[in-house]
Image (cartoon, rainbow, N blue to C red; front, side, top):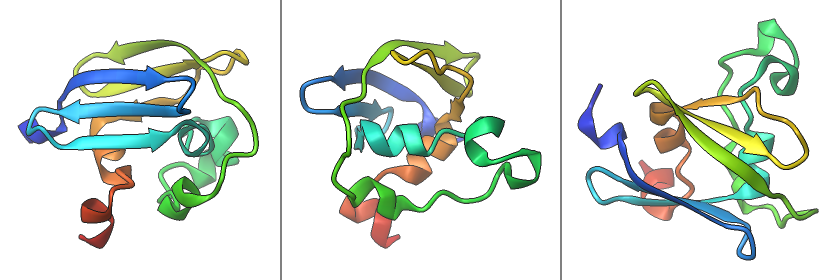
Length: 112
């Protein structure tokens, strides 16, 4: 896996409603929490096994949040993914590093 897909630093801003990842290549991705929650890759959120792996619409990161989201824990899964534990008890989504980097909502990434 390309080294740029490794997270160097992860922080959650509950008040700002964001999760920020600083990648190994110093690129910074700032994800709105609601967009991350709606991008959850688990089978339940994806809508069934036949919907797994379909691309996520990055436009959801630009929609104003409809509620406050809280992350209670973050755990790395091996060296390939991040598991987000949401305060509402949902925790089955495992977000691959490469997928997260591909979801980066910054202008530079969305124009590539």
